[in-house]
Image (cartoon, rainbow, N blue to C red; front, side, top):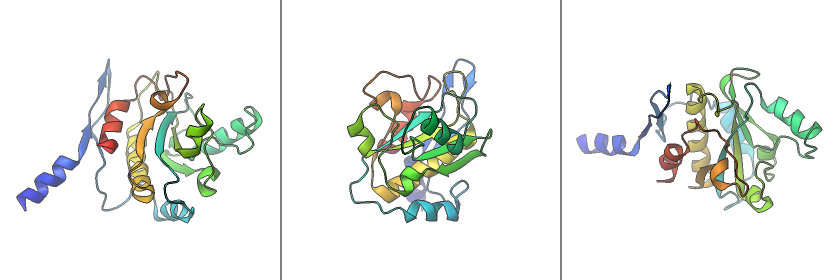
Length: 197
């Protein structure tokens, strides 16, 4: 019994990051969840409804919106009308910060439902194999909200179970053109280590 608890404890990674005066609270990443707080049964059914071909996805790429407010609907409109993207919302998922959608609310884009390539990376080849998750917020000037981190953890854990052990990375680490996304206050090394180890 003691060995089982020790193994479970060793598998759970704890995120604790400090940058200047910004300090993240302890958010457990990769934790097995007896119940879902952010991925309701309806959301999980929606994720499951997509017909995922084996080996379809190789990456999960985390972005920030670089805006203080937003939602899947707002970004879809911007991508269609301003960026002239025929398929609209560039991401497969958006996680709200409490502005136009709930704090930690997971929104599913049509690119996921239709299993279409993303529009979130500069490289067309990378977009074909990378699931895009956008967290609403500008993490060059503020930190990720705790509810967003917890929702991100649930979503990534669920997607990895669904799609296989795909690599979790961030926009700045994979993009062929330099970018600061998802922002200087996003602890990408620790997040990547939690899912890729």
